[in-house]
Image 1 (cartoon, helix red, strand yellow):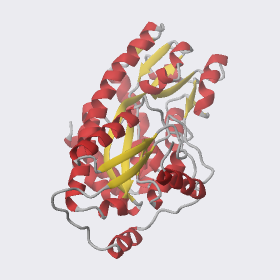
Image 2: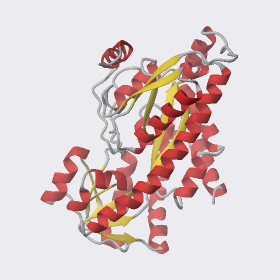
Image 3: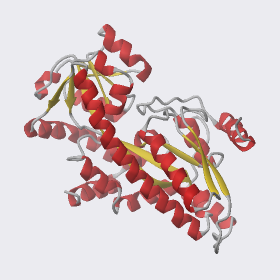
Length: 366
């Protein structure tokens, strides 16, 4: 039976939630309630609560709730589960986290609103999910940013994370860390070896203006569609292909209705791990240090599990008869060149500063 505290959290989520929705591949819902706090409001509330206390010896007791829309067999869940295990062990059982996967506490939009509002403590989703709340996260929707996973992880564990803090805090969250499930890849029933092969292909994409613009720029016919409808769309020939990380390709049996996986590596499937800002800032200093340490180890653990699972997923695709196509450097360069118009869109909507900071961080991580 669920704890009373969690039942209260559920009721508060329901009262806060809008009618947006978010699919397991990060399809965005629209926020209909719970306007994110301004930085001034957030800081004022933290100041009203007084300075963070310090503890000596035994940790105080905390019992936190973590929400996600994805299932237990995902990188998100593995990450938060490891975080909870480490906290429990190192606090002597005085800091615990109850984890609710599969949208038990609302879809991604709903539980993110609840974390910002403080009725849920911790959330995990994708960078795309945060764009409705923190528009600056659109920088991660710029395609073909990273040369490889190692470069992406170097950026997401480096100084650029500090550049994001201002935007996170204005949005009412403390970002504990990032993990990933590799890159999004293209699957299709038609082979793609060069850019011209994409011409006219109906490719299902998320309802995301940047993703739609990118695939149209490549010559494909970008086709927004709910994630739950994709398998049938492929099966019936309504669409030729779709794009997702290997985790979602195999998790939804796309390999059964697709002949090719084309490794475009076009967008990182970046997983977010965040806590209510005021909760984090109000913790004693030694508890914050412990939280940071456990989060860092948990995200590293999640990345190692992601690498293992991607290798397994690729084999599953091959065993099902899918051909995996690795594009040569010339074609990858052409994809990046076509992506430049999306960079311009992001600059127009979010400003130049964060875009330039991200590009500089990527250049340093080469």
